[in-house]
Length: 85
Image 1 (cartoon, rainbow, N blue to C red):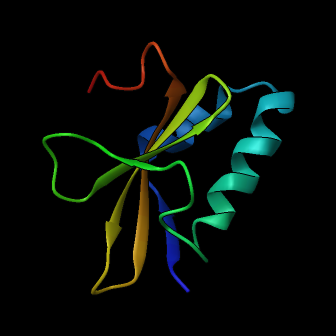
Image 2: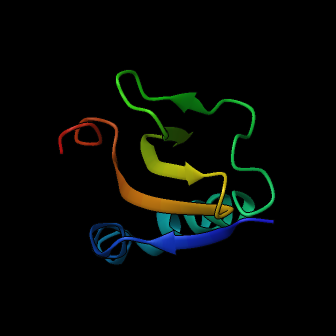
Image 3: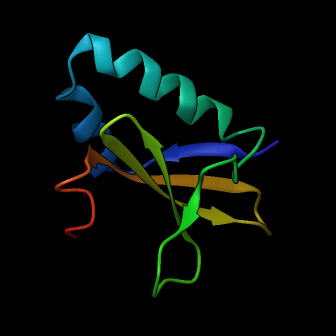
């Protein structure tokens, strides 16, 4: 089992979401503790440990640390804005 950590930016992203979007996204984030690479996840090109999952039009960008067994959620954004850091 992996521990889930939210970066400050991800917390702010989640607070801005409507309740109808918030609940499905939080459900998928919680599932990452059991399976950090679920079906449909993709590794972000050009990075070592960054991954993303799709939830409708939203993307959850996260990093997996295998040695510490941690998943760090970095961003939760609409697909148009998700890859701008």
